[in-house]
Amino acid sequence: MSVWNKTSVAKQVSYFRFTFAYKQFVMHALSQLLRALQLEANVFHNGQYCGMWAIDTSGKGEMSFHVVTHGSCHLLIDEQSIELFEGDAVFMPSDAQHRIASEASLEVPVNMEVSLSMQDLVPNGTGLVCGNFGNANPIFKKIADQLPSYLIIRREENSAGSQIIDLLLNESKSSGQSSNLLLNRLADCLLFVMLRDSVNIDDGLFAALAHPKLGKAFDLIHTDSSERVSVDDLAAAAGMSRSAYSALFKEMVQQSPADYQTHWRMTNAWQWLANEGMSTLEAALRSGYETEASFSKAFKRVMGIGPGKVRAGPQAA
Image (cartoon, rainbow, N blue to C red):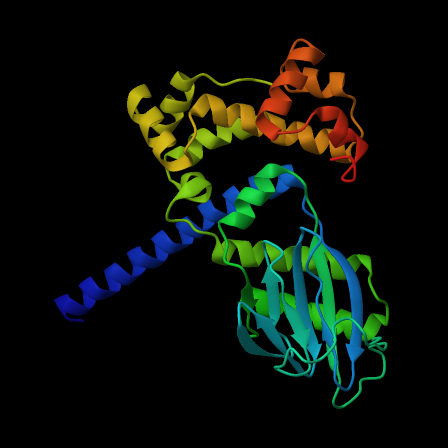
């Protein structure tokens, strides 16, 4: 083997090692955020449409998605018409107004046709699994704001997304149900892959979470939200001086380390209040606050809403 070839192979090996390590950082960062947010899919449609039809599921302020499980259709969004085929999935992270339709036309009335079961496939029909990810936590909006108005996952061989879609297609066609637990969990997996492959890692929160040095410090913050970690300890974990660490953190996250810690504690508290039925006092103590009043004040300042309203549910919020 020539010296040039050896050098070329070495560079390729280094590149793949870097890519693998980088993906691990991104996956770890996503796991931390999604675990705190407890995002779960809500599949509300699994059926097929025939003839001329159009649907629009926007307007609820939730991240919505559609997976084509049979046939083909058109996505009309942002003054574009994009053809979708069996196995394609589309996500609208910020609830952009859109149409999924039989024709590339705005003339077809929306949400007028009734879908049929998937058990007996119609040759010219279009099967769709539709759902959303509802979450009122402000940090979820930050994630959505870093994404485009829509994202399409095309069915390609050997990709993680296509393998999940294959499982989703099989379940869609065999279950005959409008929704079930397995469809929801497969949609969760698809969201995770979509975020991993699509989030902006050049700047912002995800770039900081995936940073080799800052990522280690984030682990300390995320391990126990009841304990506030000093900036000195965070800088030591990152292998940096206090001033260099604070400057890099502020540049990438647009928050000081102390402010981010408070935000993270409140993100966890939101989940405890909204999903686990925890009392405000319990959430305060678990978040490291000595009194319910001090916690409530900090929670409303950071999250823009009082803990009582979060406990009461989305309608109150």
